[in-house]
Length: 124
Image (cartoon, rainbow, N blue to C red; front, side, top):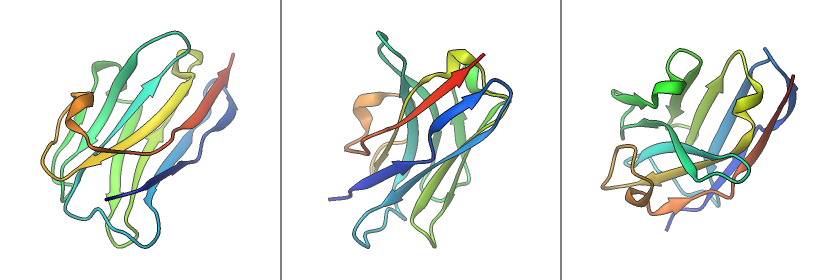
């Protein structure tokens, strides 16, 4: 079982950038797992943001995330990242990371292992 710890969120101003991190806890690794980021804004459903395949050769983005978001991974550190540039108030949400050994894509139920989430709040 893989435990994930998401971090890097915070209160920022519109136009700022953030890099969210998702690390495997307790010395575990997810080197052979695909990973993804989802977000949940207040009073809204979880929303797919981006995914990366097991070795980082393929990435997938939600339409709103293309151009401002970048997903990446560093398997030597067992860490996955989400770079968000030019943050907007509508990006305010709790961001969750997830990984799975068998699934790569935008479907939330495809991922078995989840982090607790990190809050991103963007003020205008």
